[in-house]
Image 1: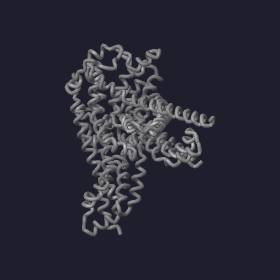
Image 2: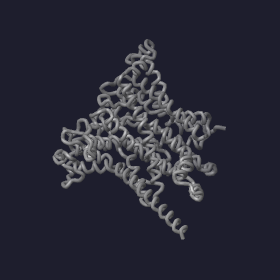
Image 3: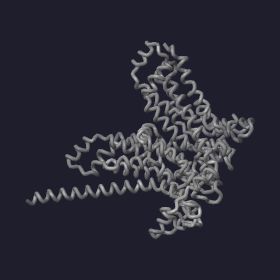
Image 4: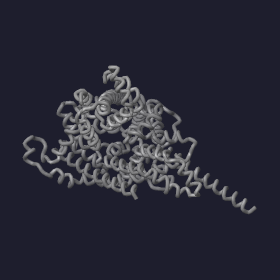
Length: 292
Length: 296
C-alpha cells in the first residue's frame, strides 16, 4: 500500500515539475515574442496618432482612440518617400537579376565544364569569400567616384552584383545533378546553354529561389554603400531616405509621420516574409549570414 | 582534353570581371593606400611610403573610442545573444503547441530594415521635453529614475546599442539552434530517460555535445558580425556617431572616407586593415578553442 502511495506521489510530483517547466517555457517564449513584436506595434500605433495627440501625451498611451491616416499622406507628400521607394525597387530588381545571371553562369562553369585552372580559380574564389566588405569598399568608393558614377544606379548596383557565396551554394547544388543526364543531353545534341536553362535551373529552383530571396532582403536593407555613393536625394534608397527623414524631414520632430514612413518601408519585406516564411527560413538557415 | 576551355571561361567571365574590379583590385589597392602618406597627388606615392597612417589612426582618440565601443559591444552581445538564443531554442524544441507561430514571430526582425526599426527603438528609449519615452515609463513604474538613453550617460547609450544589436541578431541564432536541436537523434534521449538521467544531465551530456559545432559556428560568425557593427548604431544615434561618442571601428572607417570628416582614404584603409587583423586574430583563437573543445 505504502509503495503504491509513494509511486503515485512520485508520479504527481513529476507531473507537477513538468507543468512548472511548461509554464516557465511558455512565459519565456511569450516574453521574447513581446520584445520582438512590441517595436512593430509601437510604430504602427504611433503612425496612427495625430501630431498634436502624440505630442500632448507626456505619458505615452498604449492605444489610440482617434486613429488618423494623415501621417501616411504626409509621408508621401512632405518627403519624397515614393521616390525612395521606387529607387529601392529598381535597385533591388536590377541587382538581383544581374546577380542571378552572373551566379548561374559561374556556377555552371564550375560544376559542369572542364577547363584548365578550374581548381585554382575555384580555390581563389573560396579565399576571396573571407575578405570582408569593409576592406574593399574604400577602393570601390574611389573607383566609382572616378568613373563619374556617383548618384547613378550603375554606381549603386555594380559593386554588389557578384557574390561568391551564392556561386558556391549554387555550384554545390548543380553538382548533385547526375552526370549521366548531362551526357545524355550531349548525345542528343543539346547545347550547354539549353541544358542549363531547361534542365539544371528547373531542378535547382529551390536554391535559386533561396539566393534570390536572400539577395532581395540584402538589397532592401542595404545602407552603407548607398550612403557613400549617393548624396543626391533623387537617388536615395529607403534606408538613406529614412535617415534623411530623421535628420531633416518633416520639420520639428514629427514622430508620427516618421513612424508612418517606417511602416511603409517595413511592410514590403514583412509581406514577402509572411507569404514565403517557410522558404525564407529554410533558405537563411542554409545560406544566411546576417547577424553574422 | 579541355575542349570546353574557351567556353568555360566565357561562362565565368562576368563573375571574373566583377570580382576583379570590385574585390581583387581593391584588396591590393587598400594595402597600397594604407602605406601612402598623403594621398592627394601622385608624386607623394614615392615621397611618403611608411607606417604614418597606422600611427595616426592608432593615436586618434576617435579611433580609440571606436575600438573601445566595438569591444564592449562584442563582449556583451555575443555571449548574451547566443545564450538567450539557446534558452529560447530549447524552449521552442520542448513544446508542440504554437511552435510554428513562435518561430515565425521570432524570425521577424531578420526581414526588417534595421535603419527603420532602429528609429522605433530610438523613440522608445528617447527622453524629450514632451515625454520621457515608453521605456522610462516602465522604469518609473518600478520605482526607478528617468534616464536619457539616447543623449545621456555612456552606459545608458551602450545599453541601448547592445539591446538593439541583440534584438537584430537573435532571429538568425534562434533559427540555427532550433534546427540543430531538432536534428539531435531522439533515440539518444529515450535511452537516457530509460537510464533515469535528469534533464539537466541529458542537456549537458547529450544535447550540448551534439549541438556544440553549431554553437561555435554562431560564436565565430557572431564575433565577426559584431566587430563590423555600424548601421545599427546609425539607426539609433544618427550619422554623427563621433559626436554621440558611440562610433564603431567600421563607422570610423566610413567617417574617414566620406562625409564631413571624410576625404582621407589612407587613414580609412589603415583603420580597415587594423579591423581585419583584429577579426582574423579573434577568429583564429575561436577556431583553435573550438577544435580543442571538440577533441577533448
